[in-house]
Image (cartoon, rainbow, N blue to C red; front, side, top):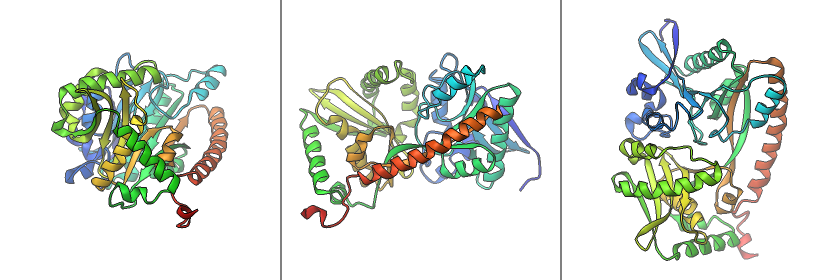
Length: 394
């Protein structure tokens, strides 16, 4: 291990950082296959930036961090200066209001995150062997930038539990949230998964799948070179519809899907419902080493249960067939519970320059953690799985 000092640099563009240097920290495991997740890869971050989805006018201004020790890049982080709290999925609007009501300026703030992506993964991207020193250097670098520029706060969202524990030891505040994930218990096929459910839930799921698959067309799965430009034309329409209803304005630009097709089509699974020769609904998933990540859904025709089939059941089926351990279905949605997705905790880290405000947020987070822990416990008890072998005979 080198004794050389560590140099922290903030870069205004990902194009200033060599892709191999970045990915050696972000996804070193990809040398032997897929990355654990594709969201912090150089190619995805570059697609976001080159497409104008982040950068000027977006409220996400890149300040990517690199940590070099001598000539070696030992750690990187996707850092952004944020002018709002949109596209984060871990909500701090109340904090912003309280801070500004007290006379402070909450924005801009610093965000270590993958824009528009509520998927858990490493946020402090360290080269193997540099985990402790690398994360420490990145945290210190982000905090120093905030302090030097009199910014209110630094946030690292959807980090791993291990990072949350390490961050807490560095004095950062920890926050938990909740999502719904499906876990593959080594099911042989979808019917084996159904066999793990209570009788009533199993019958309901079969009914929903039958209803969806009889919508008057066919449902297809595409990945890699099977995805053609015309499929993106259709999906862009779906994405715009959902984005305008959920967020007012879609976060991603049309060009993002163009760049993603060029560099990431092998990382994506597109599920399309085709009727009368044209796509009428679709879902986009990202493929990780052991996890399928459900990201976007949209439609131009509404058919009963089609959303459940295209988004949730097809994702489960794909994960079982490809021996993936988990499906992460994105943010919110208690309706996922009845479809085999159980509540799990998500993690984030927070730093505030104002000591009084930090103490107030710490008290809030303590109460919030207890409430979310209780909610996860209650929701899990309402899951669709059999409580005992006798349940099917009642």
